Image (cartoon, rainbow, N blue to C red; front, side, top):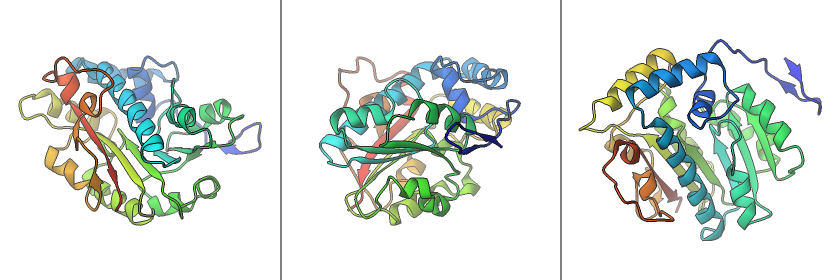
Length: 271
């Protein structure tokens, strides 16, 4: 273990094993990644060259969803699970732009997220970063740094943006969502995006095979499987749709491309 300037322990980094957070950083042209992450990204891009564009779409829907939930939904607590490395206009920047008192907890299993996030957020008392595993949602929800900022007696937005497809079926992603759903109050929101199997595009299954081989995670699920992640929740219009089609700021000129269709997502409210 290393120790941060604030005295917190930071897990040691294993630069020889790729992580989803750092591979995503590669896709966004970030600099916080290692050769092993770039190898996975290169293999994925060889199968689906549109992945860089898809990563940008995933960031853009995050901005739109957070803005909507903070303004129209009136929810100013955000639990960003599998948040990845800090990037330009991250969740707290969007939320606090429209609701200055918004509180955001970033959670990721990759310790480099903790190291970089804490440095960036040191002067933001309404935001923190926690290293935890969403596969253990009970421990996550009871983490003192989570409960120190998030009041679970009040509505919260649970964000699962591009993380559930990194859970294998046997890790029960639907059960994890259900546990989270059952432990937040009525009026809470869930924002979920996922890789989606395209029946007319073999590369979606080829990508799954490559990710499982190189990264150890990566399930490209069918639209029917993704619907079940929202069980017990009320989907907001327009439902579960390709990312650029969720309340776009500008018209989408071509919704038929792989880049547009490969990831779908939606926002739902707990009644």
